[in-house]
Amino acid sequence: MSPLPRIVVVGDVITDVVAALSGPLATGSDTPAQIRVSGGGQAANTAAWLAAQGAPVTLVAAVGDDPEGRDRVAELEAAGVDCAVERLEGAPTGTVIVLATDGERTMVSQRGANLRLGVAHVEHALAAVPDAGHLHLSAYTLLDAGSRGAGLRALAGARRRGLTTSVDAASAAPLRRVGAAAFLAWVRDVDLLLVNADEATVLAGGLEPAAQARALSAAAHRVVVKRGAAGAVWADRTGTLASAPARRVAVVDVTGAGDAFAAGLLTAWLSGATPDAALARAGDLGAVAVSTLGARPAP
Image (cartoon, rainbow, N blue to C red; front, top):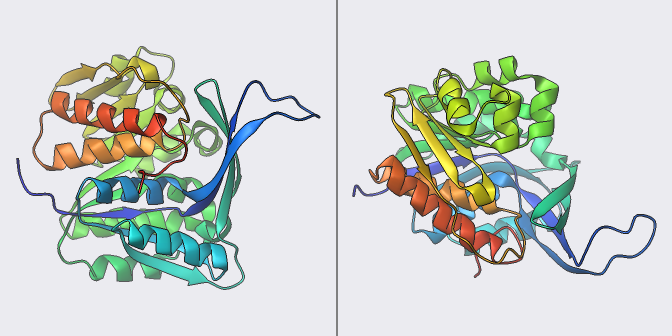
């Protein structure tokens, strides 16, 4: 296996308020829950999981100039993530309320400072990591109009510097709002695109998962469709098709599972693993994530 290059992760930093409900939400009344406030955000979570696997990783993001932003950066630095994080006056650090029940989660989001991630900051951060070999982009950066320029510049800057690239499609609802054609144009020719089952349906229609992955490989060189408890599928432009089952574990909270999966996939693939081995490693890390409350690795 090859040594891991530095991975630059571009995207969001969030404060997660995770409520693992004891049962269905009793609208208009009380529902018992286990509640935890912690660091979140797709990009920040992925960076933390990468650092936990020993990967050299730099996070490029934005927070508010507030106590929450300082706490989120301090947590990431303590986890081994190099932080190239803008602190922006006049914008709060992003916050998400996560309601987790029955193996699903519903999110209520205030994007906050993430909407103001700047092109100049991204350019400066990329120039400051000459040892970088790969760039991973949270698609929230593209799906939010305010940060879209920074996301597009990150992909263009990575290609110009000879880095490989990956994009996690982020979330089905905002994908529907921007439209499949626009999104696939933004991510065209990335080396690796990750989508979950709902995102794959938005982007490729109601095909079976392997056919969705093959269809999306017209846009990205490699595509992985994450199917939760049903495992994952890989397809690429060489015609390779691989799949892996999910590990069966007791599910506590699925928040951050896709981010852990992405970190496992990237560390394996960038080290030279086969698609089968990369999917297996990704599934193992995703299983660890769903077995615990919260979106980050245990300290």
